[in-house]
Length: 81
Length: 81
Image 1: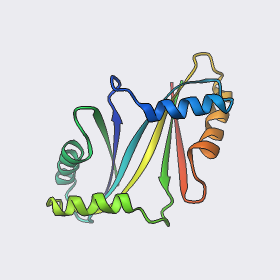
Image 2: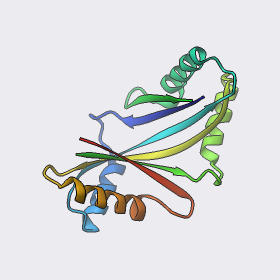
Image 3: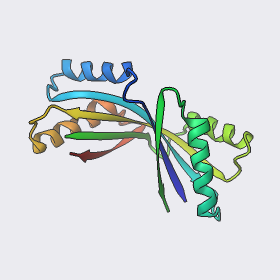
Image 4: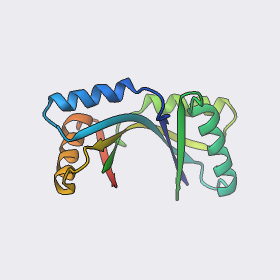
């Protein structure tokens, strides 16, 4: 079982990295780009035999308490087999 | 129209950041984690009125030539309206 945790800045938080990429793209001639925001993701492989129920709870705890800074970031989890 | 470009290290490339997260999780007591790999993503908003065909081509070029280092990284693109 695998999980992907996507962590991004809350939409109310400034994203200087994304802004830098956006202006770089603008100066390279890509004029149709309105906005860029950058985030990170974690691809987590679980030990074989981990119960799906337990895994989901654990990944949710990890995402909330370890991978995300709740003051400025939000997360989204996707599971796959 | 929006595009998301996910950039990750090729599976043959060592990922020290992911390894660090993995061992941190291990020492926090999360024993069911087999592996962690970290990547980044770019959420790109396109100017309204951009032709979908043109946007797809442009985003693909941007992902390949600007956002990804083809020696060690690979990318995946998702489009949404």
